[in-house]
Length: 536
Ligand code: SAH
Image (cartoon, rainbow, N blue to C red; front, side, top):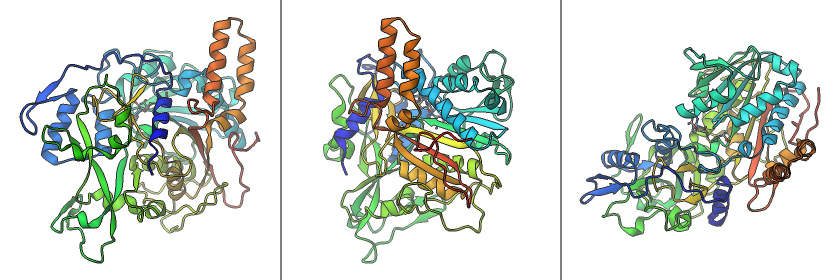
């Protein structure tokens, strides 16, 4: 269950350029004080102090809640806090991503969208949607590429960017629009695209705001988005540890957990986040830290403000989420087995699937197996709460690029990243990037369950996806037109790094997964990059 050394490798990948650039605004040395626990306590950031105060009132919080606050709280979240000149991306920031490494990455993603558009009969009313666009680099390369395929460019009716961070929205607008004039509607702010004539880009805070129209064809991109979404962590614990009197507060009222012989010997317990105070016994330190992510911190890092403990009583999430898939059930017999589940990711992927294939009619209760290679039988994970959305002709596609295992359930993968180095996720809350491996199979399962009109391909390794998309040929063409030796050397190093399958490369650890339309009675068509050829 414990893949600690792998975790560290993955962490190092997200912060790929190994150059140790110190985080410019991490206020090491400055502490915020409060009186929590015994006596005066110093906290490393204002967000840490606020979180600790809240936890003192409510009790320990889920990892999902901690992650959400640390990443997107308007009061000091990593992505959302007032920009003080600190940039998360690039050599001077905390991590670097594939589109930032080479323009070829975004160009090939643009070509992938074009091949899907061709294969699906050149639909009009195309929506281009990206979730978590960062600096906007991927979208810039994608739209620039698409603009050279005129009929495809003309078919685009709208572009939507889903972004939680106000200052990243500004950066994206600067790069992607040709105007300072923005209009505001119920959806969010809009401005004209620099690359696609007569087409506007609209920024929304959530994909649910993007209009779903029967006649539209959505092409959705998610690059390093799912790894930033909050996860819950559960561990198998002997049920004898649950006090008989425990009451659990749920959204529908208090419940008392079952005790006695009928209760299974092992139960999923949630790992929760609590502040470290002077009274915190050292024995309760987190499994994650014991296993190594904590050990990834160096002596330069400040001490963590928080730690993980196993919740003694079941939580609403521990009673529900591990029951949503047979994959989790299979692990119940393994003592101390750990699983990570991201309900927000499952809800996003279900939304993608419904946009492409329409939602399941209320009468349809069985899920169909994957139309692709996998011999696994996917079973339902969670029920969709979205209203029925009919789509008589499924169309569109979603491309998910991220890191995580191909088929196993992530465990012990929560990590902090700061100045291109892995660190404890519990230091400097709001000043450290937090992420976790993506459960690709879990995403596939949810997409298939949400819509009868989609099929899922992959995940395949990034090296395979980019290789079959023609990265070598595209890079060689770029190199031919470049005389400057230094630029040539950088170009060559960059594209090779994207497909390098070694421990420090991005080719094997990063994966690509596609959701495309499924039509009853039609032959399965593999998308380009997933074993298929250009058609149409
Ligand atoms: N795709 C970009 C950026 C990845 S970082 C790249 O690969 O370079 C994650 C991105 O998701 C950031 O833009 C961050 O602000 C955004 N993000 C994180 N959580 C979000 C949420 N809950 N809703 C919307 N955007 C979110």
